Length: 44
Length: 568
Image (cartoon, helix red, strand yellow):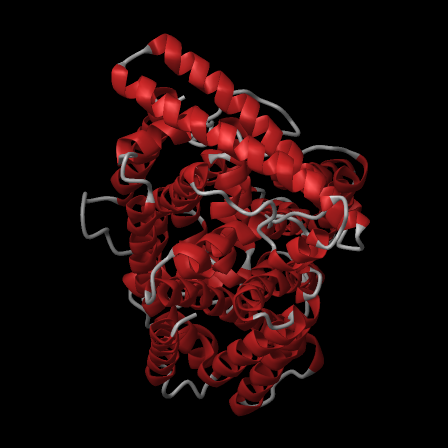
């Protein structure tokens, strides 16, 4: 398969690397699930 | 609707559409008409992605879902951030570098023409069905508020959306989406504040949250696993991840949003914004539904929220005893709720337990009366499997919200419909023209010819969506129906893209047969088992990958070779 010409892969505007941005999003998901679980338990 | 409502509604819609069309000037080439010349900034893509996903169904049906089943539907979105990260890291750079118009165009580069054609056809089947439901939802709004026949309102909404999409292309769609999401965010906040203000003076916001919890409406996380349980944390994290991987990675209605980005980074930021904002937004909408439930603990709601069917059963002799049982149970539930609030204020745990028991007994009576009323609908010639979930929020809005706010909420619902539907129709037209017409029917024609073909394809899919919209009322809760229909097709598409990205040895014929096997497995599960539709994506994907790998390793001669025809 012919390779298309490279397209520049810019760094993110914050946190330096995309890997760190992805990790932040996944940590955020864990926190939001924990918050939703607490919410459910608190008002059950 | 009062004059102020009409003013807010018409003013909002005209300004949104006019702004979108204004920003779409110069969309006269295929690249500009279908991909906005790949010039869109991340925030426009981010809001467009959210707007395309958040159709009117989100507001009409999600709030009703929360009213009848609590907030556990939010778990469905737990897989979304995971999917966004995976897609940003893997799919986005590949699609950008391949400079494709559609996700399925990439499949020809990787496999062959028949695999691309099959994936395109699967997408057209799936998204064509969903597009009908998207238009049906606001038609429902108009029929409830204005008393117009649903068929006429479906036609009116469809014609408006098609006209706007045909004229403006994806730039009009995207910039309108930006405006629409701003109206939606504002409308949601106003709706929640209004619900809370309308609660009885003796019931504080804290009391309302306490009551919603006691009534089981704040069950945002449920940890018990069940294959046929639609919404729990496991189906959300596993099934939801696969569904959103398929939706954002293989569904052209979403892929086309981020293909318009001016760079890989801009497209990634658009998707990751969605990863951050989607769960809180859905939580917020479900919470509004829970607060509407609390409001109706103190103000008696109608036995059925669908006014036409309610009027029909009211003419029946069997209605009077049902209505009496319902009113009596409502009074008991109201007293139980007030006692529960008093016990909560006094810190009396024993009285709280008694109040909860009384509440649940009364709620059971109310559910029984509503079930009898639903049966009466069928017995008096109404639709089978009647459900009024989609009417709950609208019924509340039109009865109790003040002038101006009603118009704003209706504008939110219209705006959401226009954004979701225009995005769907635009993507259907793109796949029809780029993947089928330009590839297999008319190769090498002028740019102008393909722009014209895209406009005709948009018109065709708009008409198709309007015709299918007539089925909407037979599908129960719309938000569930849309995702359930999608799940019949997404698993195979996802499996094909997993093969494309993750298994270099797999060739075209193996992927093609794998997709057929995946569809067969999903439809078998749909027809012959009670497995929740959230698992169909995982099942379909696994069957596609397993079948293709088996062919590749055990029957390599049949696994296919690269297609020698040149893509356009």
